Each structure stands twice: as C-alpha cells, then as structure tokens.
Image (tube, rainbow, N blue to C red; front, side, top):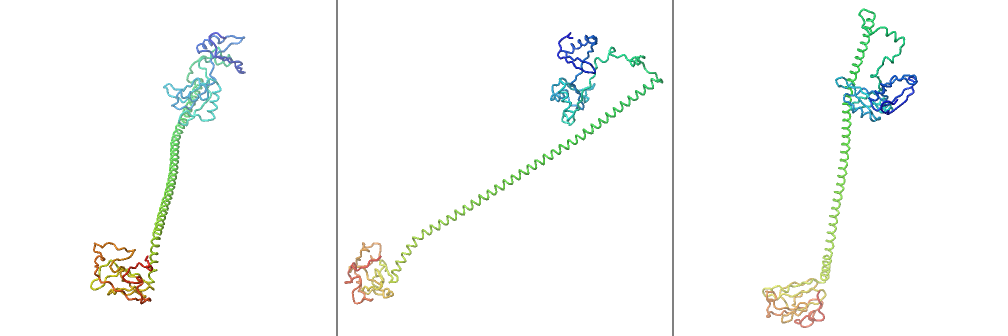
Length: 425
C-alpha cells in the first residue's frame, strides 16, 4: 500500500456494519490525495478498495457564540480540555459572525471531556452570562460525494432512472404535486423563519432582562458594599468612642491621682510646718517657763525693785537716787540715811533698799559691778559730784531691830563684801 510518501498513523477498525475499515494518516494533504486517486477501486483479494478522506472524529460544534468571540478566544477557551488542532468561528459572506463554530481536538478523549463538561455545566466565554452549546459535529463529505460507480443498481434505481431530468408542464399531474411539494417547503421555510424570529426576540428579551437584572445585581452589590462599609465605619466609630472613653477615664484617674498627690503634699507640708512650729515653740516655752519660775520664786517673798542706777539726779533737795533696792521677806532692813521723799515701803514689811552700794568715797565695791572710768557721754553717774551729802543710815524696820544693817554688819559706809552677802542670780 505504501506507494507515495510515509504514513504517520494506521488504524484498523472492525465495524460489523462496514465490515472492516482502515484509517491511515499521510504526511501531507497532497500525498493523501495522490494515494486516494491511485488506490481507490483497486481489487484486493477479490474485493474492491474504497478510499475516502476520513472525517474528524474529535470535532465538536459550538453554538450560541457571542459576536465578540474570535478564533483565538475559542481555541484558548477549549484548550483547558486538551490540545486543540483547529478552532474556527463561522461567518457569513459579509464576515459577520453567525454564532456558530467548530473545534477539532487532537484526540477523542479531550473532545468527550469537553462535551460532558459543557453539557453538565454552563461554560461562559465572555462577561455576559451566555453559555455556549456544544454538540458532536455532523460529518459531511463535500469533496468526493457519491459517484455513479458506487451506486447500487436496484429496482428502485432503474425505475427512477427511466425518465431523464425535465421541467413539469403546467396543468399536468406532475406539475400539481410538484407545486404542493414546493408549498410544503415554503411553509417549512416560513415556520423556520418564524421560529428563528421568535427565538431571536426571546433572546433579545432575555438579554434585556439579563442587563436589567445585572444592573440591579450591581446595585444590590453596591448597597451591600455600602452597608458593609457603613457597618465598618460604625464599628470603627464605636471603637474610637471606646478608645476615647478609655483615654478619658485614664486622664480622669491621672487627674484624680495628681489631685490626691497634691492634697497629700499639702497636708504633709502643713504637718511639717505645724511640727516645726511646735518644735520652735518648745524652747521658747521652756525659757519663758523658767523665767516665770524664777520670777515666781522672788515674787511671793518680796518683789525686787531695781532702781535705775543710771537715772538722772532728782531735782530740788531730793537726795541721790538709790542704786538698787531689794524687797526681801524675813530679812532685816538695812539702815541708811534718810533720802527724802522716795518710794514707799513694799508690802509685807519689806523695805525698799535705797542705800547706795558704795563706800563713803562714792566708789562702788562690788565684784559683779566693777566701777569703770567716769562716763564722758552724759551718764547720770557722771553728773554726780563728790560733795554730795552722805546718806544717813535708815532706821531698822523689820523683825530684827536695834542692830546694824543686814549687809554691813558694822559701819554703814563699809563695803558689802562680807561672808554673809547673798549673791544674786
């Protein structure tokens, strides 16, 4: 059999109806045509060979295509089922898409898979939800056709071949029934056109409804998206308000702590000041108390009237002012010269001691009050002269009488530095 070129594939199919078929694939279309012309009608084992171009067994017809679908898009869409050899969108004589096409796969399994998947589901090629309809492709032999030598010579063949081709004459039996056949064909054509028109109107109506529904669906999606965003905004606003409330509470707590801390500091400062005041008042209080106790020891027994030894000399014939006077309870009075009008006697028989504590020469003999140089600043002691009349001794007043003064124990003019001298504080 191998007369021209090389064979790519040979397959023998056993078919009871066709007895046996041999399918082969040549390298090119030209070699296949040469082989067909030379081998067709050859007698092999007393039987003639019938050679024809084989139809594509893995071809599918695709309907309901959108006008925007091209050959490339169709091939790309069906490539997911398997390798595609050819994909064509059928157009009319003006190049407008007819909505039909065919796809040829390299093998039958991908074609069967595509047929099953598209039949069970809705396979969409574009944005419009318009599914494609996939059917097995009807195979037609439009090349060889039916030659006379292949016709079977039956009785029906010979009966129909009795008359040659002709036109029926009007008014004859043949013309009447030929007209009726033509009317039936016209009715079929009209009905097909009406069906096509109804189908087209239904498609347009469905497309309009689909467009409106799609618009409504988009609006619904937009509303849902808007509601979702509003819900998110509301949730974010709630979270923001909660955050603000938390911050406000934290700020209030901080302010409360700060205020409490300030109050504690103020209270602590007041306590410190009060404690310092109490600690500062205690020594003064003790000193005042000690002084009061000293004065109290002296007060009940006789107040000490300290004459101002540095006061100016009295006017007139008043004697010199006393240097120091003591009022002592249960003590003998110190006699001295009369000093003229002077202070009265204290209570409880206490004598006002007006005797100057100095000898006859006018100098003070006291270790606690040493005599300094004469004052040059107009002191009262400087204004006294040495020619002053010495004071006469005071007569004894008190429980001890008739004796000498308490301090002198002898001459009134002597010094007072005796062993019985009572030292002052």
